[in-house]
Each structure stands twice: as structure tokens, then as C-alpha cells.
Length: 183
Image (cartoon, rainbow, N blue to C red; front, top):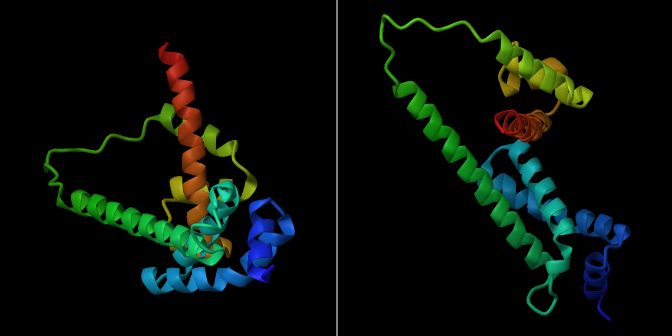
């Protein structure tokens, strides 16, 4: 039996050591594809991580009869790269919308609602310590991802991941909380 076939079979069966070997062998390829397409180290690192997490969690769908393990991983990576490009496009569209909004000169911004601020602070307090630090700087100090990265000495991709995961957790908890209160 060919070494690649044995490795693919071990990976598909859930062998942790096989995952480590698969990552060691094909992560540079996935990272190279991501960095060439995205041009951003942090995004390329995120895509690489997401690719291998998706491959591991979806390993039961891998079929060696349909494709080699490397081709399957490249397919997953291409999907993650496309997702990242789409997310960037959404951010650009939102930014464009925000910059084209005309503000009436009589319009005065309302101060932030104390109740909303307290709810956000409570949700941030429920996060893990690193995520708490990142989210406090983002919400309360209004720092950019790059500024947070510099201030905390964390890689930019890690900061973005903390923010993305934290917002997802907070949204899920708040949806459950508000759905319960509305009933």
C-alpha cells in the first residue's frame, strides 16, 4: 500500500498522528495558495487553520476514490479563500455605504445607551481572558485590528480570529437572551 494512501486512510479514520503528518506535509501548500490569492499573512494563516479544521471535522466525507487527500485539501482551501474574498467584499461594500451616508447638519449623535453598554460589558466579561482584552480594546477604546495587535503584541490574524469568534459567541448568547425575554 502506497504511503499517501495509508496516510489518507489513517487521517479519515481519525488518527491524531495522521492529522499532524497531514498538516506538516500540506500546510505549506495551503498557506502558499492563500497568501498568493489574498496577499495578507494574517488572512493566509486563518485560511490555513480553517482548512485543516474543516478537513478534520469533515474527514468522514473524504473519499479516496474521488480525489487524493492533497486535492481534497486544496478544494477546501479554495473554498476558504473564496469565503475570505467574499467577506472582504462585504466589508468594502459596508464601508462604501457608510462613507456615502450624508449627515444632516442638525443631526446630533445620541450618547451611547448605558444599558447597551452594560450588556456588552457583561458579555465581554464571559469571554476567555485573551478575547476579553481584544474585545475591550475594540469596543471601549475603539482601536483598529492593527492597533490592538500592536498594543497586545499578538499576530493580526489572532486578533481578527478573537474578534470574529467573540462576536459569534456574543451574538448567539444575546439572541437566546432576547428571544427568551420577548416570549
